Length: 307
Image 1 (cartoon, rainbow, N blue to C red):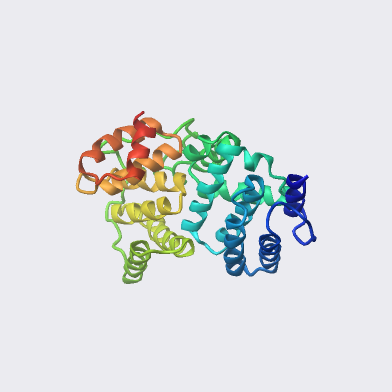
Image 2 (spheres, rainbow, N blue to C red):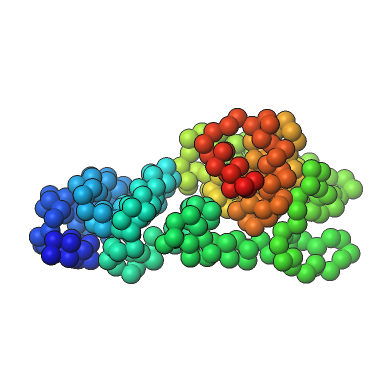
């Protein structure tokens, strides 16, 4: 009976219900949901974080609270908080199938899963059975967005037919487009845009700042297909916001970074892997690992890509 009432509290957060969760935390859950509905996402995130603390002994109630918390964190561009909440949600799902059994409103579940597709790597989603369909969705969307690998045909040629998978990247790939005979120099304004993009990427930025960096960098990269510097900057910015297909496209256009840039090589390997080119990712990752500072994140991707 207690579990039923807890589930009802998740479905009807504004109702006065009795459940195993302390009434104080139930009231915080309701208040957090109301704050979210009013558009006060920062307040909602703070309130729901406390509410979730009071539901540690009720896994399904906790899963519902974490789902709402993740949506509030997404709205405030709290990427680190979103990742941490997803990790907690994955843990209670793995141990108790709590997300599977939580009776979340359909629109809440759909909204959360949409943001999981946008923010969580496909390989991570695939490791959790309930989220495997989201990994398939993410990979399908990435494949569709990467199908036209380069929107501009070679001079004098018709548009090439779409490839079934991205081509393998070699150590010294040919540029995606022939460089003009006399490459245009970047203007002072374009240099300023690239400098601002680097600044945003170089600090502890929120997602909205990283997106701004990407917008600045890709504007210059799209105008200067011959500039390796611009392509690599746009690729790094795309990587930082998990736009894998875009990152892979800019990396291909700029060519593989040199051995003196192992981090960029790693970014390229991850981008290729997440956008479907596992063989190209493995080749580049092998070249980057000897010069790359190792971390749990790097080691996890090395395991995924190299087996």
